[in-house]
Length: 184
Image 1 (cartoon, rainbow, N blue to C red):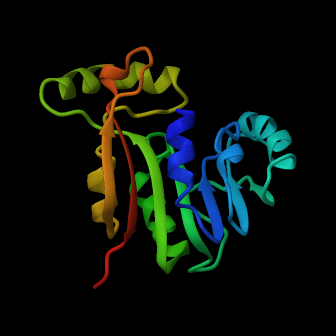
Image 2 (tube, rainbow, N blue to C red):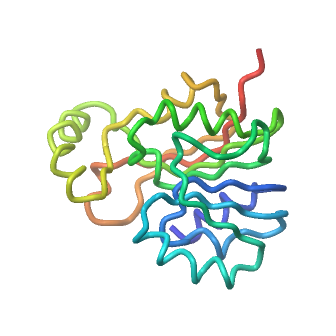
């Protein structure tokens, strides 16, 4: 996924908010940005993230906030980054609403997420979801994240579907793209 992260984060600019920074896997890929604020509510992940934040090429601040209640004023960020996190937030709609709120009017949401499959694979995702969620830190493999972005007022500017070359990836189609706030 390193190549995908690198391509995605080329689109980051200005003040960046990363939702659910996990272990800091994105930090090496930030280039010409002003600053990066990473929210990560999981203390175990934050412990792994903090050392990487100290050696990043860009200024990084780490917050224990969750995506559903972001402690930042409206319009604080030029870019919000979400990589493999909208599947785990407890309230995806609320998190997307908060992302929209903290984005500047011309801001962008950069994302790599796994999403609900289509066809017969959706039944498999629904069947495995209870076990998957327990084993994988609250991950819901069957969320229709793209539709949720639309409901939250985002418009897709670029969009690509793919399956990563990892075990069980056939159960979790992925998407990568750029979304902006839909103009009224």
